[in-house]
Image (cartoon, rainbow, N blue to C red; front, side):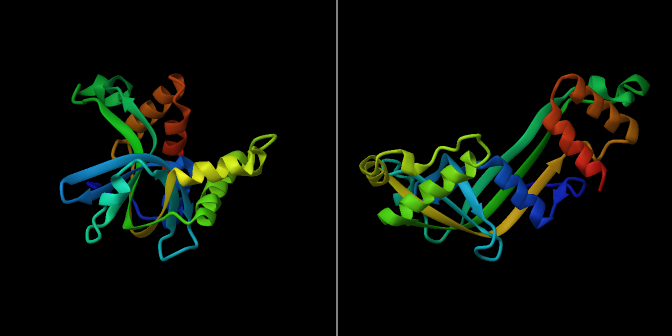
Amino acid sequence: MYTPKHFDQKDIEALHAMIRGSGFGTLTTFNDEGIEASHLPMLLKHEVGTLGTLHGHMARGNGQWRRVSKTVPALAIFLGPNSYVTPSWYTTKQLTGKVVPTWNYVAVHAYGHLTFFDDPDELKTVISDLTEEHENTRPKPWEVSDAPAEFIDAIAKGIVGFKFSITRLEGAWKLSQNRGEDDFSGVLNGLRADGISDVADEMEKVKSK
């Protein structure tokens, strides 16, 4: 991923936190015919492996899992908060007019190796883990055990699980760090005024470091 030094994020904890906060990524793999991608929920287990391991599943009918190259690493892409940035927010616009639109964003690329499995018990563990991850903050969390066991067994037969062992992480936090103080503040205030608080929050985080 092309990442100028202003935007390069190397902090592993920050990269892991972004993956966990997103929870949904694009799993990209390579095969003899080219490139395939699926958009999937994924759960990061940061303590497994050197840089963590992603766990998830896809429909058995999705042939991507059958065609994955065993020699070329896979890529999982996670996109965080992002927004269009209008030149109107820059003080520089009033001073010189030498400004153009851009886009602020947070993104993580995880590279690694995939293994697939269809063991029923392992699959039900993945289903349970993913469910717990996204239900645990709800007032009355839904649990897999709330559904009939035979129904979950049938669901498990229709999916294939995967483990993605991360070997390399790249992060881009493109949040106007390359602009002067006045331009940065102009973007921050403009985002707040437009109600785009998630990108503004990320900008304030990078500014505080």
